[in-house]
Length: 313
Image 1 (cartoon, rainbow, N blue to C red):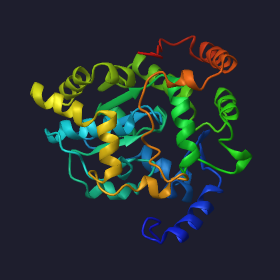
Image 2: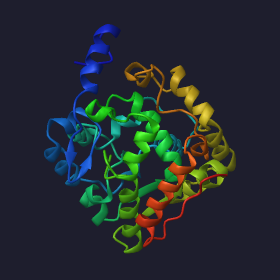
Image 3: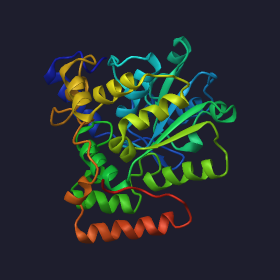
């Protein structure tokens, strides 16, 4: 049954039943409650790892709330060489959320996305050096954004231990890597950093959310070069304008990108994908004690890496 096509009262009953279910676990990682992975986590994740990647496939890899929808729209416009909004939702080509057999019928080039850890990325894609775009964002803003997302998204909230609970509950939970979606932010970024450092992954474009905020046209030009697309300065600027936070959020909620399905499943009936889109909002959430606790955790967990993040612009 398509939850979006039932009447609102019946939909709410279905969503409430969804919210109380436990999250699927695979290889030490907690996953959102996507139907395909809930049915059989081992089967789906093994199929994902063994996906028959194509040479022309492009894979967008991010931790949740690191700018996935934003970069997905930017890259889609680069690939079509036009500043027109794409229809639909990036979830339609999200590897852990979709029926992978449907990919067989999709024409090349396939632009796919995922939040799964590096060790779960399709093996053929890695071994053959197919294109990967990896986007990172500073962990404090990620925590704030994911907390607000989690409260409203039926695939990420649950009644087990009242997760996500209060902000204080949540930030302590994240520091302890409890309810560790995709293995947790630190583990996720550590795996990618090691893969790049050891050359386990080669054909990769690395970008930072904060750089995209600071210099969107320059970052879009870099992305286009990686994708072997020659775009005019005017088109690059048009893409930057169309994909500004306000314009992209408005296009999503107004229907310019197709039906806004997110608000129909959101607990507060808003589109939880787009909240503020800023850098530095964490300062409005972290107390002094919480910030000290979080900094100590980062210092301990990242001390043997070269990972650096920008916390304000």
